[in-house]
Image (cartoon, rainbow, N blue to C red; front, side, top):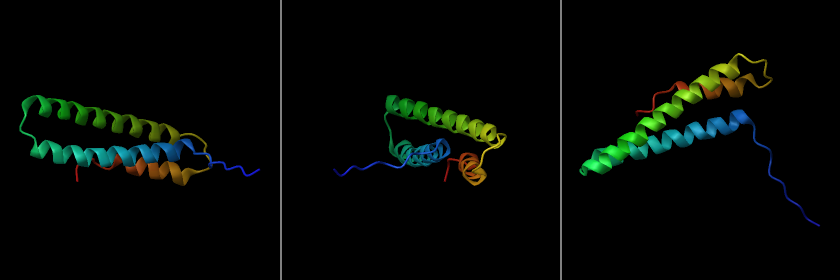
Length: 90
């Protein structure tokens, strides 16, 4: 019988991917906001942008907390911190 398993993901790796997804969505939003002329849609897009900024701040706090813990993979935590500290704006 052939079985396949997916490699387990680390918490820090998952958070790094979330930060990358967040940055990609921010870039999409920036384009939509620049092209949009409908007031209600602009408001909704602005609210989503605020939520993305808030999540980025949460990820920064998590990265700082993880950096204070005695973890074996300090490089992964450093990467998460670097990604979360970069501004979302291009």
